Length: 387
Image: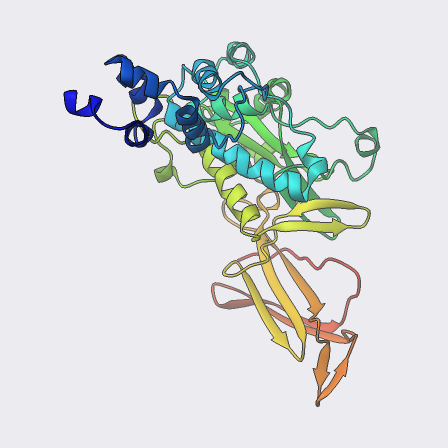
């Protein structure tokens, strides 16, 4: 201890910054010098940046605090009932989603509600007689789903395209998925689950749905932590498909272990990764924008360039039109002209026109459709595929 007392202030600051915040707080109890070093706001600025990605001393509600140390303490107090490592992970997940939405889709970002309180969550659990998995509880503590106040969308035939999960459109089928606020989780669960016939339905709650005219529903099993999506047989026999491999879900109700993760958190983390990496993007659909789940980057998207024309082909699974025995997909073919134009026989053209198309569609190396005919202009291509 005497050797540590002789260490310079800068070196001591470096040592403390390598510790966890709670360990630095414990070190402050050892001596006056350590207490002084552990109380420096520059140290707590480091902890706020490292653990919470905060460049300002903010509390969980976004309010400025007098110091980074006080701000950090308020965060720990607000989430003291949860594993701190899980809180940091959930915040990172939401930060990634919000940052992308703020830059690219601010009208959707504005629909995110403020976080729910512990009382709100406990009220839901009391009404529905469930216990939400820890990761999902924390997800709702940061943002209580989405609300759409724009009456223009509420009264439109399309519905609202601002769901942060996004979706797809083909022909007369349009899906855009949003996260339900707790009050809608309660009302939708009470309305829908009594109509379903499957084991364990009393432990499932509706957490996400399409906010457009084509229906798509997601159910969270509060006991296992698995997320399910309804198929076309949902109302007939309660058929649903899991969204995440069961092997990835762990310790959804145990605060004493590390690496708690339910399907809801894994689902949102993967969605944020795809947005951040440009795998999925915004698409313009007539007079509105929405997040399209059709991949636009390899390996989930095939791309070919011929004579300056870029063609991208991708597909998405359409569970609401599928069954457990017969899967359904929709495909998208997008064509664009490279900046240098279309080059044919050494001549460059600033425009070109599609006259004919021939698409061979395979599933498991078996040809199931052969599209060969005149070109279609101006319509998003899409068709169900049945392997």
